Every structure is written in structure tokens, then in C-alpha cells.
Amino acid sequence: MNEKIVGIGLKSLEHEFGKEIVENAIKSVEKFKVEIPSWVFGEFGGGRFGDYMPPGFARNVFEKLDDAAFINKLTDAVSSIATHVLWEFSDDGETVSLKKTETVLAAANKNNLKLGSVSPTYFLKGSHKGSLSANNNEIRRKFVDQTIMAAEIAEKFASNLITLWLPDGSNYPGQIELSDAIDNTRKSLREISSQISKDVKCLIEYKVFEPGTYSTVLSDWGSAYLMAKEFGSNAGVLIDLGHHHHGTNIEQIIARLINDGISAGIHINTRYAADDDHSAEPNSEMARIFYELVKGNTFEGENKWEIMIDQCSVRENRMHAILHTIDTLQSCLAKAMLVDSERLRELQKDDEVILANRFFNNALLNADVRPIVAAARLNKNLPVNPFEEFIKSGYQQKIEEERK
Ligand code: PSV
Ligand code: MN
Image (cartoon, rainbow, N blue to C red; front, top):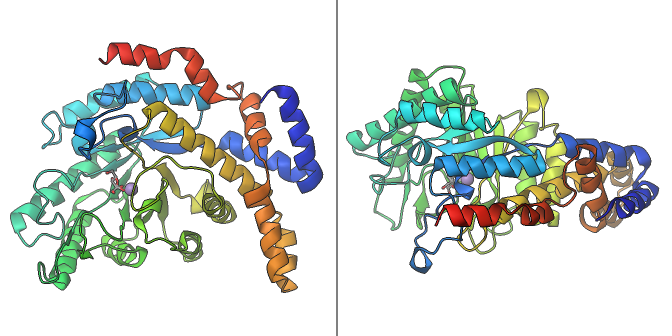
């Protein structure tokens, strides 16, 4: 899209949606920042296709940071990098090292990047009998201690935020006592909360299944919320788009959490069959999600949500995958900004069921917002097409050569 086409596109959008609305949409896209996960650049943990990895994938945390810095250079949209303690801050993959953490922070700063959410890594070696929900006290202790360490890292080196996802559950009825697993989790979270700084915020993630196929200890937003309450006032719920049954109305969950003033965050990705952690594609669900986030003023201020990407899928070029998601999120934000909520309210008041739906979809589904996204990039002297720029840059060839 060249500057002339951007101009024509903007004129047409202004004509349809109004100049002020379009200008505000451009400003929002300019300001938009999102946390990206370190793991999007690295190895896929699923062990499929004979451990196939896309060429040039990052082999360690330092290469992940190099890649993240290049993405930020192309987009200026990266707020921070999400980390997992056993992926980023460990030498042996089993214990957390503060010394390693210091070197990672130094490398991040050198790349003009901030460390964001810190996750304890409950799903690697030793959690097949549960992590925070385990009946065995030694196992529970190990993961409680790892979480306390994650909180220390979050406070000293990152953004004061820990994000917890438990792989705890079961595959067969009778395998575990469902109620005991809940009790143990509650006990673990109370222990953690009593031993970490009150400044550290904690978001608890839920997932309807996987790895548990029969039961999952934290399976929905309600169970995550109840546990967050146990944890204390500085805790909340983390929604991951891939962690729901098909057809779940995620916008409704977002609206509810905002309405109840519950601290929250979102892990963005696209799910097809199940929790696939794919790049986010522009679609009307994503635009509706952004509409709720915009309406709830969740991008800054006291209602601020933690907006994060959580993706890593085996087949795609790592850099393309994250550029694709960022592009999608910018366009879904632009679409959400095009909804004239006053006009929508009038239609709702008049009980114009279908007209309201058509009006809503005209922005969220039908509008071509590429000129808005392009204008935001041009205003910041960024490449209008980050993909083209990436391909021209030779970065891919460079990393494929260096990381053979
Ligand atoms: C689990 O499926 C999850 O969504 C959690 O957020 C983890 O931290 C992340 O994926 C990486 O495995
Ligand atoms: Mn997630």
C-alpha cells in the first residue's frame, strides 16, 4: 500500500465513519503495544515431525531477544517480553538462576526491550502428578518455591507480574480426588501469596482441557477467579483465547471481568481445532474482543489489562508468525475504534436488533482498515508493510546462516 492509496483509503473511511473517528483510530494504533512471548521465536515443545523446526529459529534466550528487538524495530509495537523461568532463567532446565536472569535482563536492555510477565514453568519435568495441586507435599513445595522465585524475578528484573498456568488435572474419573486437588491448589496459592512482595501482581490462567482430558483443576474463568481471591487483592484472571470450548463467547467473559473490576489479562492466539497457539488472524471474533477491550478502557490507566500474545506453532517462520499477529491486532483495534458507540446505543434503544448488528459488523467485519494501520505506521516513520521490510532486510538469511 503506497502513500497515495493510503490517502484515498482514509478519505473513503472518513466519508463513511467520520473524520474524528478515523483520526482517533489512527492514534490508537500508533499507541498500541503488546507483550510478546519469548517462546514464539524458539523451539516448539510438541516434538512433532521428527522435531522439525523452521529454519533460523532462536536456539537460546539471547537469540530470542535479538529477534524480538528486530520485530520491535519494524513495528514499534512491542511493550515487553514474556518469559518462563525454566526456559529463560535456567542453565539446566530444572533450576532457576538469578545470575542467568541478570545476564538476560542486561541483554534485553541492550536491545531496548523490557522483561514483562514472568511465568513459573509448572509443565516440564516432575509435574505429571500435578504442580500446585499435587497431593505429594514435596512436589507441591518444589512448585511453590519456584513461584516465589518467579515473583522475586518479576520484582527485581521485570514488570512485577507473574502469570500462572497449571497443567494440573486428570485423564480418568477416579484418578485423583477432584476436591483435594482444589484444596491443595488453594493451600499452595495462600503460601505463595504470604511469601511474596505485595507489589507483585499475579494473574491466574485457566484452560478447559490439556493436558488433563477428564478434569482440569482450573478449567474456566470462575475457577481462576476463585483462586485469585484466595491469593489476595493483587491477583486476577488470565484469559487465553485458545483455552475455551468452541463457541464460547469470550467477549462476554471480557465484558464481565471489566464490569466487575477484576484484574485481568489476555493471551492472544488463534485456535482452530483446540489450543493450537497459532498466529492471530484477523476475524470478527478478534475484532469483537478488541471492541470490548476498547470500551473498557483497558489499554491504559486504572482499568489497564495485560495484553499479551501467547503463540508458538511448529510449521511457520517464527518472525512471520509474530509479525502476522501484530498486524492482525492493529487492524482489529482499528476496526473496534470505528464503531460509533453513540449511534449503536440509539439503535439498541430503538430495539433495532438486526440494524444494530449490521451497524456493528459494518465496522468490525466489513471495513477495510488497512489505510488506518498504514497511516499509523507512516506517522511513526515505520515501514508501511513490515513483512516487505523484513523480507528486504536480509535478517532471515542472516539468522539461517548464523544458527545452522
Ligand atoms: C499453556 O497452554 C499456555 O497457554 C500458558 O500460558 C503457558 O505459559 C504457555 O501456554 C506456554 O506453554
Ligand atoms: Mn497462555
